[in-house]
Amino acid sequence: MHNVVIVGAGPAGLSAAIAAAAAGAPVLLIDSNPRLGGQYWRLPADNFGDQHDQHFDLDTGLLLINAVKDRKEIEIYSGAQIWSATHKDGINTLRVLHNGVEKIINTGNLILCTGAYDRTLPFPGWDIPGVMTPGGVQSLLKGHGVLAGKKVVVAGSGPFLLPVAAGVIKAGGEVVELLEANKSYRWLLSPFVLLENVSKLKEAFYYIKTISQSKLRARFGQAVVAAHKGSDGSLESVDIATIGRKFKVKKIRNVKCNVAAVGWGFTADTSLAGALGCKQSVAKDGGVVVVADQDQQSSIPGIFVAGEITGIGGSELSMAEGV
Image 1 (cartoon, rainbow, N blue to C red):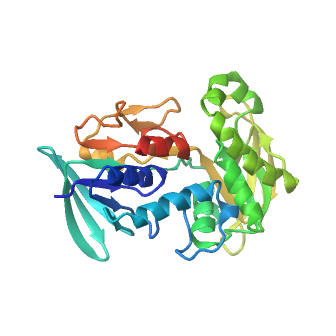
Image 2 (image 1 turned 135 degrees about the vertical axis):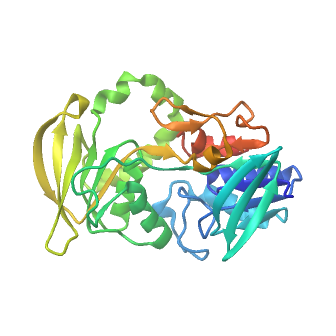
Image 3 (image 1 turned 90 degrees about the vertical axis):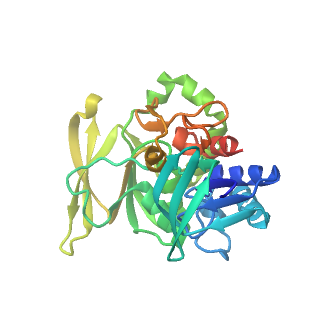
């Protein structure tokens, strides 16, 4: 029987592990990635060199990662896959594949920090090689130091488009189009969104500076509506539409590219919480999240949730919820 088990080693999971260990609890930290940091602080190797260009506030991430590694109370399963999760009589049972061996983990205190993934919508040609999610492009850059393509279209909606575009530029690629489907004035219609996320403005300006220096200008009210392949079967161009209300297409233009990174925000990864029977609800953005009380406890006593699984809010909120 394990005292505290944490699933996910991103900002929330790392923070939770350090807080639990500091309180004297033995911790087992389970993560599917080969290295700690999650998607936000994804690193290509333990000896990674200078990766600051691909991260905002990497120093904070390194402090958390090294602090977790230094705590003798924390045992780490990296590169582990949880294929079954059940809850019965106050005990949570996880079946985990780690280093090719199945391990059965039992705990009365489970903390889920499973994060989120790109929200995708199908369109003609979306299965052509070279059409990816923004998260996929960023994962290649952060996790492997690989630039997905030399001429990239970044499109969809949400602030995550900014770090992806900036990352491509810093890696030597060309962002030929940066497209936000919403109108630029949309945020002004909801000032409370800005007030709730003042701390994120500094991060946004960090990316905007890089984008501006490359002479790239975002286009609003435009979206990728189709992709076309070349003679080799890979992406050759995309159709970009000027759109109106309810995604009504007004006019279309064709743009050459070899990568299209298209995403529509994030969806919380509630699969594990769902398997355990935790209550879920629909958030303001229409996504499904796991319900938590003021102590981050789910509807099931002994199962806690932190980070994007409770709603998309960024790294600082994730760290606070983890603690």
